[in-house]
Image (cartoon, rainbow, N blue to C red):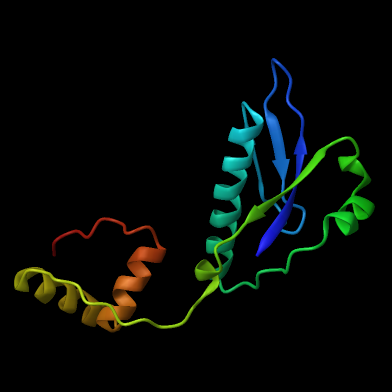
Length: 137
């Protein structure tokens, strides 16, 4: 999947700005065109992950010509495409095998039970929430 991005050319004293019109509030910048485009890829990934984690829907990408016509505020800007790995949109369950010391597994299971979750659900929630520190208790 490829999302169009609008790129505001930078100057010697200003960064290159990037807006992703299909993803409201998704933007980035960089000191060079290449950096701006790399930052745009990261911004799109973060936007999609946050939206999926919040239970939101991911809009389909529009065509550049459609966006150009709909957004006269981007006249004079460059247009490019950012590729999104389709795997990041895939919520298919996948069995994984991990190795943990028994004492760690025991603590993990106890915390999952205390939270009213399965082991898998607990691990997934921790990953989505950024891992967070697990305080011994």
